[in-house]
Structures are given as structure tokens and as C-alpha cells.
Length: 262
Image (cartoon, rainbow, N blue to C red; front, side, top):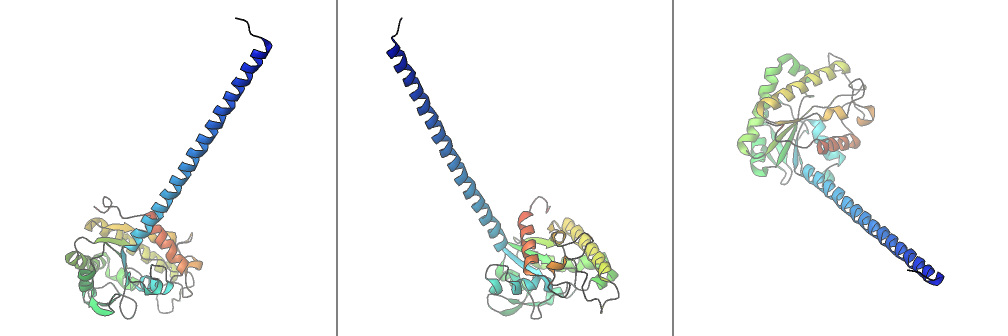
């Protein structure tokens, strides 16, 4: 079949126009998919952040003054009026055989009550326990069994009054080089070694009791095991807001694992 020059030109132009149209459609489709994927990824990231924050919002924190100071630093929902931190009038708590009779201030009502009463009343989804710095030298001298027995008193108090509450044992935090050791018979480096040993006991206990252990202390340490200077609030052991933010991020990145707690 023969075609005139004009026919061939028209056919060529038609093919070119079809190619342009297809290319345009492909580009628009790709762009639409890309925008959709971007939207989905953005939504997913927001959902993840919301879930992580919701996880932290379900915690009750109980421990020594390094836990209680989370209130002063305003790092939790409600800021300095948060109801997620439990503590005594003095703002600290020692893990010893008298732990069951200690009276905390229940944040919602400002009533004084035992930990057993508070747990029965609140029935939190999670409770984070952080002990080891207070009386560290005495704990080391009294030994592992004494330390574990004291912790078991607290653990059983929680289990008996709120069986569904998930217990997280968090490592005690290190001290900085500038810690005032005047009232200690050891130096700061030795105190940190004691705290590390107590943390090992806490981890062992977690395994024995079927609890979840989280080693938040590792995110606070320098290369020699001291609390990073920028994370101490001036006295060498109480923490700054940025230190607590690092701890909360660590808790989000190492969420409760029921299998690991068995």
C-alpha cells in the first residue's frame, strides 16, 4: 500500500501526540502515587508518635528523688502538675524492709496513703520502679539477697493490689564526676560500680519474677560510666530536663515486651 507524503506526515504527527499523551499520563500517575505514599508515610509517623506518647502517658513512676524530680522538670503531661509521679512528702523513697509502710502523696487528691492503697485506687496499666542510688553502699554491704527481698516486698504489694498492672524495673542512674562525696567513704567512680552491680541484681530479679527490665542508665553515661556532665543539675546526681527527655525516649524505643518479661 502506498502513502502520500502528506499522509506520512500526518501519521507521524499522530504517533508523536500519542506518545506525549502517554508520557503525560505516566508522569501524573507517578506524581499521584508519590503524593499518596508521602501522605501515608506522614500519617504513619504521626500515628507512631501518638502511640509512643500514649504509652508513656500510661505510666506511673515510683522511685528515689531522681524519679520525683521529673515533676520539677515538667517533662510529663501536665508539667509540674503531673499525676504520673508518686513520692513521699520528702520527695524521695528508700528501698528497704519498711517500703510497704511508706506513705506517698496521691497526686489526684493530695491524700497520704501507702503504696498498696495507691495501687489499689489507681490500678495503673504500667508502673516504672527505679531504685539503687539511695543507700547504695549499705545495699552492697548487706548483699544481693537483702536487696532482692526488699524489692520483692514492693513487687508483691503491687501484684496483690493490682494484678493487671505491668511492672517495669528500670536501672538506677549513674552519678557524675562532680558528685559531692563528702559523706561517702568511697569516690564517685566506685559508687558507679556499686550502682552497676545493683542494676545487675535488679535485672536478675526481673528475670526471676517475670518482670520487664529496662537499662535506661546506658543512655546517660559517658565512656567511663559517669553521668554525662550536661545531664546533671549541679549536684552530680539529680537530672536535668534533657536527661529525663533522653530517658523517656529510651523507654519509647524499648517498650514493654511481655515475652521478655517471662
